Amino acid sequence: MKLPPGKIPIDILKEVVFKNLGAERSEVVLGPAAGLDGAVLDVGSKNAVVSMDPITAAVERIGLEAVNVNANDVATFGVEPAFLFSCIMLPAGADSGIVQTIASQMNEESKKLGVAIVGGHCESTPGLANPIVVGCIMGLTEKGKYVTAAGAKSGDKLILTKSAGIEGTAILASDRAEQLGKVFSSAMLDTAKGFYSQISVVKDALTAYRTGGVHAMHDPTEGGILNGVHELADAANLGVRIYEDKITVEPETAKICRFYEIDPLQLIASGALLVAADPQAADKIVDSLCREHVYADVIGEFNPVPQKRILMHKDDSAEMLARPISDHLWIALNH
Image 1 (tube, helix red, strand yellow):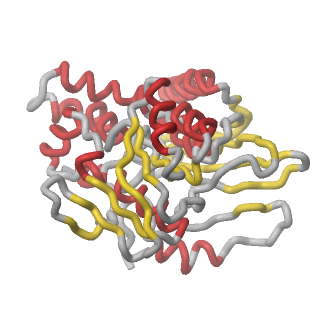
Image 2: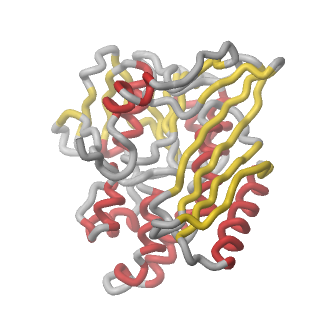
């Protein structure tokens, strides 16, 4: 089977990756599973939450993304990210300036979040066309004081913060600026590039968790909002109904997606946060987020039938919720 770009299909994860996990250790409280953002380890009096992600499609702000995308995964447990390891791989022949750019971006973003960079590796790698940065972030919490992406319950409300395709919009506006500049104004592209400032969901996640009533959280990344919803439902073995008209798509995202003929709901979406919440707490969580200047709205609800995953359109028609084969960013980058 030839693999699509980006994340490998969930059936290969289940049938191959999850069956080859090395030795069993008693310290592993939560290991790999479909839809989960990280692992939970027993480290004495505390739990450690650990997550890892690579940045492969971005170029201009790859250091920024490496910090924030990984920090987001730890924050979805309701835990503050604290320690970062990174592996920086550069194309053969790259000069020292790119090391300075990536390292300074990582330093700046880590300071904003209170994260210490504690180790890693940096090399020039034959065969690479663009830099790749793999990050691993860890956070510490009191034992049992966290949520996982598997915690959603039937009847829970589904909350979304911010908008669709945030990261994809920023990447395309930055890395395809010359191409898009022939069609769109520099002011519009500058606004779209500015979406990088929204990529962190640490404030979103910690605000929601501390408000109470949160059962699960997940940051939709590859495959966009639609894949993120599927991953949250997969983790809890539930169905879900979402409402298209409740999902914000910013004008810049909509214009860029129309240009590339891609779906904003299937465009990489770091910067948005999905929250499964007790129905009685959903409005309070939305209000708490809005007080922190984080836009949020209820976009759907979970049901007990895993096969019943529905997208309601603005005209009241319905269809099965599409499961992205590959993130639409790859379609745009190959345009």
